[in-house]
Image 1 (cartoon, rainbow, N blue to C red):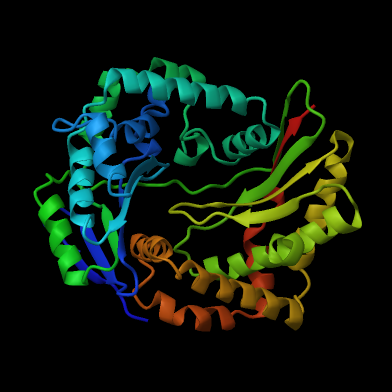
Image 2: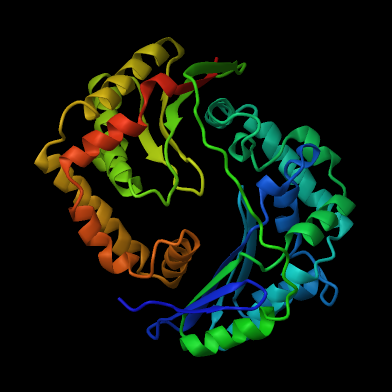
Length: 411
């Protein structure tokens, strides 16, 4: 497969472009290192509010003008924020793409944060946070994360913030966060679509090349050595308990991540939610949905199993999940099951690469995590090289049941 063309600007922004001549559209997807881990305690959620407001008006464009310019050509521009980064994207036809990139650049660099839009977005966020308090799955997820990662760890905190912090954030706080954190240094932009790669790179260099760079951020993500614990929260009026059970594992860049990913597919993904789904759902009839997932991020992401069960069946469901977890680290997986999961893992990648959006997201991940430009060409070979012994080893090594956290929310 062809690889993107790369260009790193003097301000520390890395540009990449991949030509897809079969498509009339062009996608830009980017990241800058401005996220929840850059917030102070009393302003949890300010990164998310900032990302939501940068498209609401600039020094040269009122919100209505921006909206008309984007929607008038059927394009789109979006922003989001997470723990590590603020992300942004635009999609447009080839002929409209340069104008959209210029608008995007203006939004990133010259937002005005209109007060009326801040209050509108604040009200939406507060409504969402209040609704979350009544959602057992969301509460369990919050409990799990806070128990798994200690208070001095950036993953301990929900990027959405809290009712108290969101209520207290002022426009000046948002402007200050933008001024301090929004900078090109350490950022990445990936473009995919109809434009020749050289033309796309030249456009991005023109728009972002004079963006003043900040100092490179040295981000230390502490290691996690959690202790097994159970945390619970009661929610009045609910009939079912949501449980999350798991451990912190390894970063996305770790050489064992792909074998661990395959182990997770065996446990809680393949077919009807893997072995966990087969036992907890099909054989025991404890839950409509029981599955597992593995996070890939810069630090130690979590492996977790989730299920929604009757309150008096929580212990039974957890015991069944534990049994499958331990069995995978004690018995070699069969050749048939291993090969089926390998086929699923290999087959999911081509599906992601069928669209410009999928290509942009995939290549951005590869560049961001420094996985190597040969990652896609070597992907199938790396999956095929994983053995049953590898699955047993990584399960035994990283799924440490003594460090497992159980979070339960329900009646």
